[in-house]
Image (tube, rainbow, N blue to C red):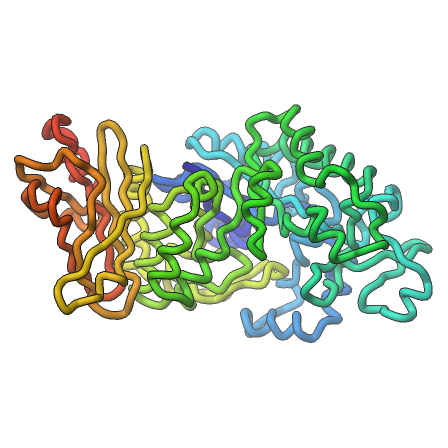
Length: 498
């Protein structure tokens, strides 16, 4: 199953440059730095922000007092040299020379491949920078306006090379100041997008598509109405993805998705879509709300991306302090679907850095949290095999705390695993109903892959009453359960993995 590690490429390279006392670009990253990225349990690296950024877009963005305030809040000693521009205000889909250019990216991809890792990059389908080549060379790709529009709503329109173009937006927020809106209904744009994605597929193994739901017929028509023209018979993404996959059949497509549009984007061809609903429930809601979410169909869940942070969300260490983060991390790491981790998350960074910035503040790493994730990632890789099942819990007389326990199992031919998470701030007790009907007649040793601790349990009790669990607040078990007839090697392997 896909496990993605997001890296802010510009910041990472600048920190490597300081570490090694020389300018480090993608083509000459030391092997040991790639080895640090290639943690057990990861299979995909997202180098966020490699494309050329727009000076024109940055100049527009710097007129926004709110953005400037966010920069200074994240980096109190902000300097002009720290302002790189937004990686989502793309001037051109060419690897920025300051990062090493296309040759540097090719070398980085080879280094990742040598370590068994795929590479994914960004694609921004909804908008481009005001100095992107399409704004002058392919105006049919854009939502255009009139001089009257510009005079009436200068915050929503922009004059470019004698034309008036709409600024990029989504339907729920004011326009973004630094980007120009593309027209999802334009046949010219659809073909240009195919060309762009095919070119990205020549350089990487997949793409993460920014705000992908904005380009669906439903959302785009609601946002732009008659300005976009007639609604095409076919949606944007089926048209585009089918043609790109004809050239790159194994290319991975990940959709940033909100507003419960995940299923629609899966149906339109994406391999995975962000599971923002699970994120919100883990941060803000109780175990029953999380459990209700996990009752969705398995096919749908396999097409989701589980995460606790990314460059758009608050840092997990700030949003989920202490053991809350650990419990939630066990949850996202051991569910079906893809998992997304964010560089700095394992070390407990707390400052969410605006993507415009090339430098982040120094923060002391949380070594205990780093060690926890070093155990969790390989444990999750061992667990997520075979068939997944959400499990029910039962309470003890006079004790209803079992409702805080989230539990699921994974069953493969040679391995069984059980995950139990206490999603509450108090001790939770209960019995977990196990899905295996061949436990009777012998004892079983369950080994926790996170701690190495073993628990001997009677098979008849496990089969009849279920596994008794008592977990303190925000604690979890990731248990290897022996498979009858598999021999002692299964237990020995589980213990070594832990």
